[in-house]
Length: 196
Image (cartoon, helix red, strand yellow):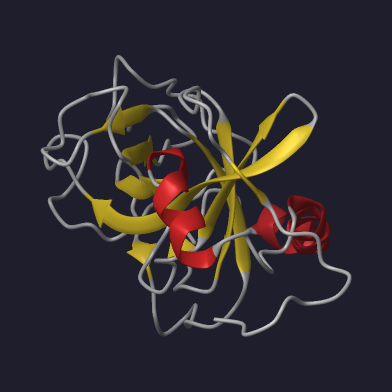
């Protein structure tokens, strides 16, 4: 946590809307890397390397994990290139995004940015991985194709956030994140389909 505002860095706007479903979430994290076939690999892709990804927000859940548009959890699935691992069917599109990815251990607390019109917003905070089991998963949340990423929904907590921190401070705006992601495109392109 920063004690003072960083000069020259515009804070991200907090998403206060209710239309996260079907938006593309853009994330950067420092967790383990890997690929969708074998999952995260802490020895080959160690914690601490910045990696970028995108994933469509497919559902909103409440704390009992029931589909609920007023819920507090944004849920995304890790779609495979052959479209066979669509864990959230019929709520999800099986076609992976160009930089489709999945969170892994070490990515918790990372931001999910969405674009609404021409404006970028902080919409979620990565919280957990899940696996629905056979036939689309293996029962282990290991960032393989078909796994799920749950992120806490910022719009559900905007009042609490503003009460505790006042004006949002020092979260890099997505323009900065986009420059970082563009710098990673050659690497991510080679790792297409790999998890974060």
